[in-house]
Length: 468
Image (cartoon, rainbow, N blue to C red; front, side):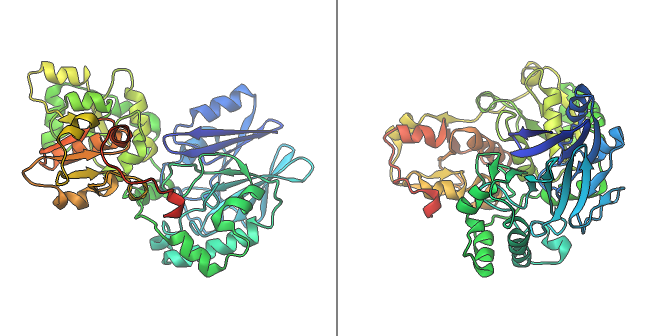
């Protein structure tokens, strides 16, 4: 028996390759499926099943393409209703894989079709549980993503999740290995651990949602408390996962079209294409195409694209570091952004050489800010509210990046103001959004709060987020 977790850090997502006696099951594959096919081929094995824990909201799964390429059936749990052919498993239905058995355990609550997969070894002993978004390490799946489709409130779904956890999962053995669908950084939960593998016993001991004496009412309150609205692209990804999508090879083929500066400008001005610059924040700050949006490929790229751009059908043209064209388009497609029209050949240098105007982001070091700041200086912190409450500049106001458009009226219209994030990446994203809205009277603090703490600027005492 072989189990391999294929973890994608930028999505904080875990897919799984399970093999026994030359037969393979893939759980929650990414959209680019060739690595799974090559892995099975290398092991002289055949992909027998493609198991989906639920209709994912935060990424486009590779189930449709993988099934077409291998002939392996797609398996969902009860209540699933995809438009393509699939096995809709019954609760406790068994799937043989070589000498091992995989049992589909229906665990609704995150969504109504949510299903976990229990792996039993060749001796019939429970060995591992692939929990999808039902149970994470340190948390459980948010119960608000399916409420519109299921005509239920988040409280209704949370109550169902409580029952699923306590009747289906918690009675299992403490030494059962837990393989979750996501880790820290995912928007599918609130308090996910950085660990990507654990045991059920450890979760019973340390996961707030599995507290032994917890009532259903307490569970509902704690699980739903503090839930931020889901990103705009989530329901669009669910739709793609339910109804199918274009092959990623075709997306890459039309996305890697080379554009001249003239062509890019025409697409931006006449076709409404968004100019997305994925270079480093330092390069973007030094010079960029006016009105372009920065989301760097070397940060949490795909989740920020999904959260800030929202509409997966939005036409996009790219400014990309040389050699990273296919990687960028692939990572966009993972969250459903397939409408890439091409990229600027020669990169930003080609724009400058064409003689066109370009913009810059004014920046300042924390040490330099310290010499000019007063109690009345407007400073805006674009980190998450939880980060802001934990530790911040004394005079700063919180305008979280993921909700920045709803805070535009807070910024001074004429006098200079200052923005910062944790380390510099998010504040440059914010800078690009502000500029695209016609706001230019700001200065970005280089290195963000990390550098602010190293300076003599006044900050609040640290408060552990778990006590907030």
